[in-house]
Length: 410
Ligand code: FAD
Ligand code: DHB
Image: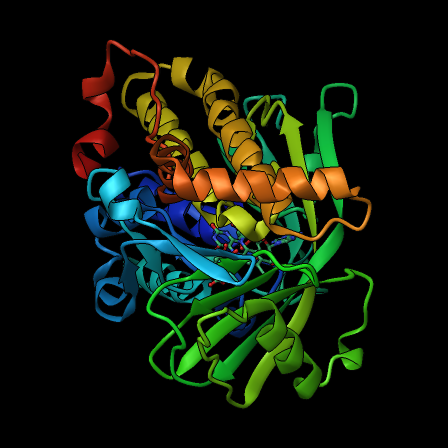
């Protein structure tokens, strides 16, 4: 098999990259280790930055999101039994918080790729990367997990295979510098069949631990509580989960949490992680393959989408005019944004969770931070501009005009 860009992984990064490349007239093949049903059914992120929403609309995959998504003007921070609204819309000059589930984004992108004749090979096994330090990279894999060995010959490889995929470890360990923080807590997430309890997302700091109320549709809600990441979900009966949610979200003014049957539950661990560089030879890492953020800032999916915008433009410049400057700057451009998202996600996580090792002094500082961010317009503006998403930063390339994608999305 031969293509221009071989993409490993059909998550948000791989699918959006393939979609953007197609709009620029560049061919790609995606290989994915899971089935289409599995990737379209995995429940993960929910919050899209304004830039992600704008990109989906500008590139023709936003129609269902605009119909079925939820558009909020703010979020609520809750602590000491009181709610405090951060008005994102006003503080950011009109930007919104969009709640539209990651697996719906996946469905829309898969449908768009297949409709345009794009190739996604699902359910592959034994994926390995070869010769990406030459002009002729190759990806090898087995169809249907253990079928015959196949080979994709390509100009570039995009490693969009998430944190546990084979792309990042293929970069020699002597080249890679990795930065990591593992948190002592995780999130237990549920989906429940219930009407919304609040019009906007609520992030709650409580002495028993963090809780988050989010939404999915008028009938389905998404909620999270902070738990021990090593805990077994079997220890969490539905009654126990609801009891904790009621405690952690309670307010002094008698706000009511509406319960419903729990239709899905699971526990995820939390880490911050950065790999530098994100590129080696003709292999480019994008999304969770290169960096992980804890979910509190709702940044992971959005960072993945930001990375592939940079990569798509770099590849466009290469295929249109042979210029490689942007591709060579890929890692530097992405990492500036990545580190800012790492900082914001760590900040939100630190401010909102219970830390078992906190002294009374540190708990006092945490409450002062919450008081400050909910009472100072300057502090709230900083939180809001990060939450809705920082603008993309591009180098002052003199040949910007040659980027087809820039014309498409501006
Ligand atoms: P992934 O989504 O992990 O996709 C990688 C793909 O590669 C997968 O489909 C995988 O099957 C495939 N793959 C792996 N190995 C191989 C292989 N060997 N060969 C072929 N394919 C392979 N982010 C937000 O922006 N907003 C949020 O609100 C938010 N909330 C979250 C809540 C939770 C509970 C969790 C767990 C995450 C949340 N995130 C959020 C993070 C977000 O889900 C991820 O950052 C996002 O999925 C990253 O996309 P990706 O395409 O880089 O990687
Ligand atoms: C959701 C996930 C997040 O990580 C977050 O910060 C807000 C909402 C969600 O799944 O809806």
